Length: 561
Image 1 (cartoon, helix red, strand yellow):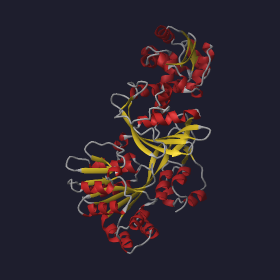
Image 2 (cartoon, rainbow, N blue to C red):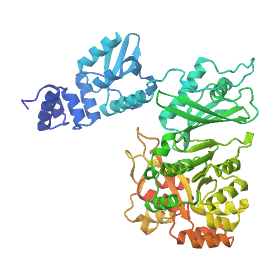
Image 3 (tube, rainbow, N blue to C red):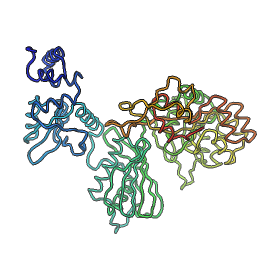
Image 4 (cartoon, one colour):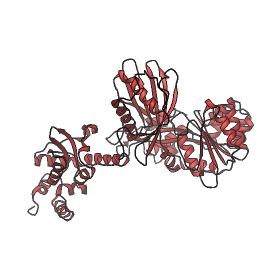
């Protein structure tokens, strides 16, 4: 012990380290030109909370839990990011000419001097846990990288603005409204949300984000600003702000830096108390993820890849809105997008922009609907055709004819499961013999929330509960069933989403059932006999793999077979 002095001795006395560890860390700290405290934190030899408690008591400084503070209040703009990272410090608040900084290592006196010099303010130190401090600094750095060229009003690509009534008081030009709307859009991007809802009610106004498939409220501005917020959003998305009686569609392209731009699809809806606006964030990078990241089981992935390799036929992707149909289709198109193929798509609107693919926005107002776009495609020497959605018999007929004449056709349809897709097309009026010969693969899909890898814990569920939920012995073999807990890194125990799929290939038996005008139940039974997992089975497999929870599987698929 005689060789150890100062703070290192305290670490040993408080049983944070043994004597040998303290000696080794002292030597490493000297070699690396670091303080002993920082070296012990970086090495992972001690828990951050234990070090923070000891240091706080030894230096007589207050101890602060950073997770209890709202990150909006941090004064990180007062000091350069380089200085924050160099000293591992964070300005937390200022009062008059005094700046309070959070640091894990108060023995670093040079940090205080550098901050004093950079800001011209008196500096007070507060002790915090190193891992929480580091997580915030990393987040700030990531934010600086993505939003480094961001100015207050952002760069919105605008065409000719719509003419507004001259006497309209809600032109949305007020600076606070502009800042509020920009902040809402940016926060949604940073949080990884998919949709934003701006909703007026009789006595309140609320803004909700859909993150990982679940809506949650993020702001409640005063109700008297409702008209100004909707006007601002309508100006940004090039809608007619004088028209408040009918729904409108628009689009916002927001340049958040020199290299990065985010698109929003906007829809306005007149409600009882004003206009509700919903913005969908269109993320072009999602199509570049690759098929391995989507969550297909190996045999399902193989079925999809085999269907994509066929020179003709029809691949249908089905599911409710927001279930990731477009991403599944574009992942397939990205695989097919090579120099030797001509690919044309018709969508309403084009959500993901991909180079090498001829994308068409359908516009029913001028007579360019899905049917017309498809007819035009067939005169454009196509190899692969993608139709955003089959909504009527005309579109379905042309798509099937294209699939029968040597083209690969990809499309989406709104049905609950793969077998129901076939009966829906038959109900539209597509002849059974056409369905049996042209459709090659149907994918039904849902998106379930993925359990957070940092905080998920094994769920102790009795076997009878699992069997009741639909688990078979095969699925339970080697299963790791986890449940959600919740931590600082996630939202209520979940982070991100995973696809749950039913991939059904049309074999001879299913084709015969269609020819005999069979129903969805008969097709589902035949699909099961052929070994194709339905949505429920796929969801239970994801639970057994520990990827999602049983509660989440029950939420996105029906509780039984």
